[in-house]
Length: 74
Image (cartoon, rainbow, N blue to C red; front, side, top):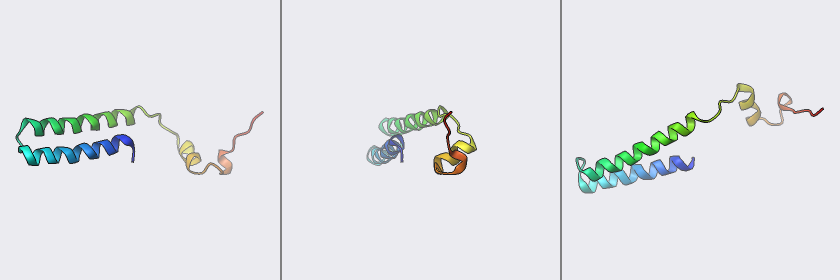
């Protein structure tokens, strides 16, 4: 699991605890869930900015020793 996904899980746990203590309609609860939403948005932006790999690139990442993935130098 990536670092940001771990942080999201931690923030969700914390938000649930804050809401249990302060009530679901409290400003503290809303702020805790806002923090979760911000992290989820950042994770989405990071994923959108990743370069897309072709199916061959994905295959070669999984099977670097395959004949199709050999690189030859001149």
